[in-house]
Image (cartoon, rainbow, N blue to C red):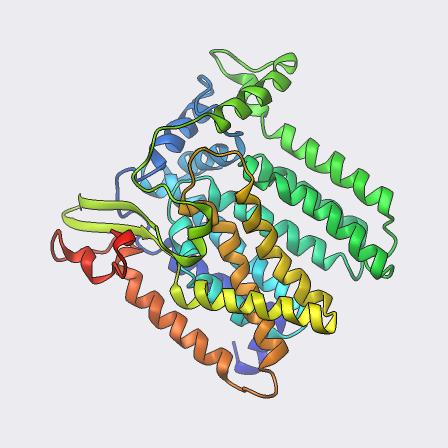
Length: 410
């Protein structure tokens, strides 16, 4: 592949995807034991694979079904538990690439956004664990990408695809439900200001498609439960099940070592140790922590994008800012008794989009090369944290102190 070829959108997307997948899959089998919330979701996946009985009833089935598919393909081992999570991580990176390229039309800008996503820390860790959030994020980012692509043509097909993906995201975790409402609100607002957006797709039709496609996709994710040997789901029980899921998700839970308040997540005050113990012949750790260069730089970028919208009316930058604001602010009102840093996973992804957008708007002509400088800093910071992101062997039990910048990181 020549340098000239790489400046074209599709070859660059292929390269970005291959790099992401290779990085996420490298040494995927370490640690070889269940870590953090895999202890909940892998047993649930095993039950779905065996069609035995309901388990982990507080969440819909799709994420656990995908883990079960990985086990069916690669075995009931660390590779099987996490294989499809790597694909979800790669899909998330490519979704960011597609969004930025469609909005701003530059391969360089899109590649910067995708590269920052690869090294933002949270995506890497979630792509290497059998949890639900990675799948939810992949569907959400894919939905946004599809809807953005439909703004200029083939609107009905792209919009319908985005709606289906949103339904699948909710079928992984209910935390994706606000994006369904956001999609409808964004369509109505943008269509009013720019009637040429989503050509051929009217307001009523868009909302009908949104409701029907997302709801149908969501309900279909419960299909495996109808075939359980013990307590199979029935159609009359489907709605009461939703009420039971709501009860379980809003119940008051006991305090947890790694709980944190929603306002603290952008500041990286309380990341989570998914693993820190002797395993596979060495002391190893996995810390879910965002790359400070991306997490904190992204906050500045969100503010810059919002300022461009307020001052100049740039709807693209305003939309990018609202992706982060909407996905983060909702956690202030979601009725959860406990909060955890991994709830910030989807908002953290939008920070890479904001950085790429802000550089395209502010630094294109005046600060040439500053985007590359930030990318180099972000890559260097990622490499610095890599040993405790990827469970590499550590020297001793106190090795964590090398990477714990603040007391709350212990």
